[in-house]
Amino acid sequence: MFSFPKQMRKIAATLAVLSIIFFSCNRSKSPIAMYGPEFENIMRSDAGVFRGFSLGDKPDSIQAKESGKPVETDDGYLYYEYKLAKGSYNITYNFDERGLSEVQSDIFITNPEETDGVFNKFKTYFDEHYGASQTDMGYIIWSVKSEKFGEVKINLRDESAAFTADKAPGKISLSIYPNKE
Image 1: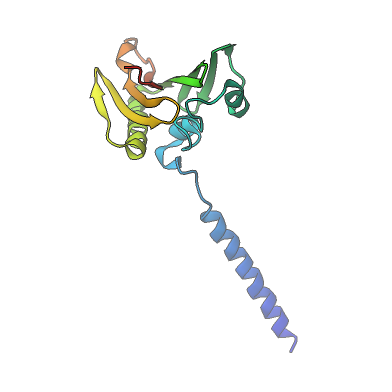
Image 2 (image 1 turned 180 degrees about the horizontal axis):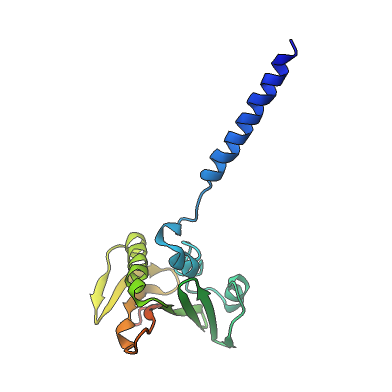
């Protein structure tokens, strides 16, 4: 008669352990984690066009949500630098009277042989989110519609060839801006 509660405690403990293991393994990852750690660290979010931001956002909103303090700041300009496990990157945010008007990021991958992999993760992400890209003068370009700015261009380019020194890092350039044509 007393063995029944002891068995129930063992079953309950086993179920609790299994539940913890199950929920730990099934914790949802970021939707951008599948593109790799460098991509995830740079983009941070799949909301907005870049790092959770959209063109038109105000400077104080970006400063409040950025993960660090700007290295340089001016009325129409914020500049950040960050480290990656495999390199570094910088971000320049430019503003006009409507808010965020342009984003420029240079990504440096320490091992140049790994640059293609990171570059391809960005291309795949943008292809999946904005449709097929076009190529023009060495840039891969996406055209995206924006409420405030009409057509917005996203340019991606591997600029590693510009570095000719031995053991120079790979460089990827990303620009997001309204189409003014």
